[in-house]
Structures are given as structure tokens and as C-alpha cells.
Length: 427
Ligand SMILES: *Cc1c(COP(=O)(O)O)cnc(C)c1O
Image (cartoon, rainbow, N blue to C red):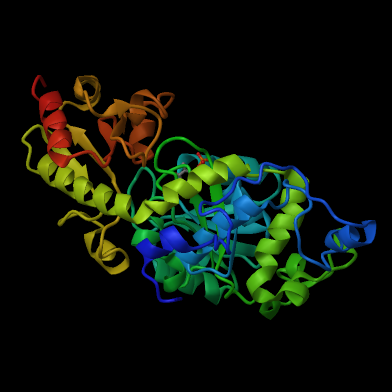
């Protein structure tokens, strides 16, 4: 049944109980796994046999959830990580070392920006940021002989820029690099970047995949399509012997479909240990089961809320990729014709003060540092996440003082709209 629809895959992939086995995915709450002899366990340590031995590397519960996410994205293999940040870091660090270089879209999540621009730079990995709408000349000029990857977000958080994934994939491939896409905001229900040429897909499962603000987590999916062996020594970490495993060559032993995720699991997880717990993976799986239904509702509610805001006299501007007239509307129709995300940004006339007044007037929408929750929530970057920046710096970062990020939940839309209406009333 490989042609199952995405909503069905959300419920059926990753865990396939046999006769008499639990209907629901069991939580394998065990750090370790038993073998009859040292010889049998030794084969696992040499990667000659596959099997579980220690949950820092792999655990049956987390593996099932990773397999489900791989199926949703149309990938060949996947792994879970302890957070979205760990997924972004591992996805890049798996193929980049000191002296290497990355090209990244400039419109990405603030945490990813800091990771790449500050922390990875300290590790000796440089980055050139390009606008997602840069010219071909600017894009070309960003590449260097040591460029190892191109990074971007399907829909950026919080700017809500939609990436031209096919164009980014073409540029990456022309320069012998994989394209890594953070697909957190769209989810595989709305967009599957691999179908448009992306090679690796990452997620903060913390957001829509969990969907209930209960569990921090991340995932990395490999398309299995990027041929690491085609580029000589460029990806030597995958195509030449790993001395920490008695000289295993990942592309030879695991094929181009398995090399990348196997290396990230047995090498990065072994050494850095940003593991997802079985308990957390179980909760993420519960979220995944209803992902398609929730995304449908998030998107229809967000579109209604965006249309209401657009027509309201007290609103200065609204940004929502699926809203007719949005700068990214056409591109959204190409990549996400059935819906994009549940997040809207807008500004109330009157700037910062009006924004604060509006937010404290909400009753249903709660002020939290989060998005993609089943329950509506709001954030005012200028007074919270970005409060250290001056007005001028905020403008430069593409976050005007009045910008409000509204993550539209799955409540009844009439309640969401009357909440917004009531909060606008006294302004
Ligand atoms: C939240 C987020 C992350 C980071 O995820 P954490 O689980 O908070 O570490 C990465 N990318 C995007 C797009 C996000 O929204």
C-alpha cells in the first residue's frame, strides 16, 4: 500500500504490530538491550550487524517514529533528535567540518541563524547568507570550492517567506551540494520538499508534529537521492574509511540511501548524544496521528483570520502565504496548493503600543513563546524575543515594531475571530 494518502500514512506508518502485539506503539523504556554473547554484541559495534544495544544511538520507539516521518516526507531514512536545534546542527555538521562553508537563506528561524552565524562559525564552518529572492548572480557568487551544503526553510519563521525550493535545489546541485530544507512550518502534509529536489529535510517536531506544546524534539530525513560518491573527496566523511568503526565506508556498506543517516546516528549521536527519549517519541507519535486533520483546520482557520484582519480598518498590514495578494501567494500555490501553515503576522495601526494593548486584550489567544500549538497563541517579538534590538535594528531584521505573530489554533473559527475583534475594539 505504498500509494496511501498522507492522512492515512500519519496513522499507519512506522509501527506494524504482528499477531498478539500491542496495537499502540510501545514505549521501550530501556537504556540497553541484551545479547547472548560478546561476539554477537561485538558485531553491532563494528556495524556488521544491525540491532539495538544502547538507547543513546537507537531505540525501537524512536526508530518507529523516525520511520513514520521518513514515510511522510518520502525519504529513505530518518532519525529523531532531542530538539529542532539539534536536528539543524546535525544535518549540517554530518557533512561539514572546520574549514568548510555553507550557503544559507537569510530568512530563517532565529535559533538556526545564531547556530550557523555564531556557533558553527566558532567551529570553523563559515556561512554566506543569501536573500531567498536573490538574483542568479548573487546566488552564484555565494558559492566557494569548499561549500558543502545549502540551507533554507520552506516557510520561514517568523518572516513567512516562501522558498523557491526548485531553484535552490538547482543551484545546490549545480555546485555539487545537497539542499537541506527545514520543513517545520509547512509539515509534510502541505509540502514535501524532496518532491521538489531537496536532499535532506529537517523538522522541529516541537511544533506542528507534536502540536500540543508538550514535547521538544527534532527529526532529520534523508531523501537517499544525493550521490555522495559523485564528488570525489568532497564528502570524504561518507565515502572514505571511518577509523572510529574499523574503517567502514558508509556509502559502500549502507548505500547512498542509508549512508547519511547511519553516519549521523552511529557517529554524531554516539559522540554528541542529543538523543530523543522513547517517552517523548511516543508523545510525538500521538501528535503525528492527527497531523493531517489538524493542519487542514489550522490552515482554514488561519486563512479566515488573515482575511478578517486584511479587511479590518485598524490593521496596517497582514502577511500570510495563502492569502490572495500576499507577496508569496503565487509561489505558495505552486508548492502548497492545499494550504501552507497556521501562522500569520500582522501589525495593528499604532505600532508597538497598539500591539501590546491588542495582545493583552486577547482572552482565547495566549501570550507564549511558541507557535504551531493546537491552541491559538501570540507573540510580540519587539517586546520579547527581540527586545534587545533598537527600532532601527528591528526594521533591518525585517521585524517592524508593531509585528504580531499569531499562531492560529484549531478552535472554532468564530471564537478566534471574535477574540481578535474584541481585542481590537478598545484600540
Ligand atoms: C522552533 C524551530 C526550530 C527549533 O526547534 P526547537 O525544538 O525549539 O529546538 C527550528 N526551526 C524552526 C523553523 C522552528 O520554528
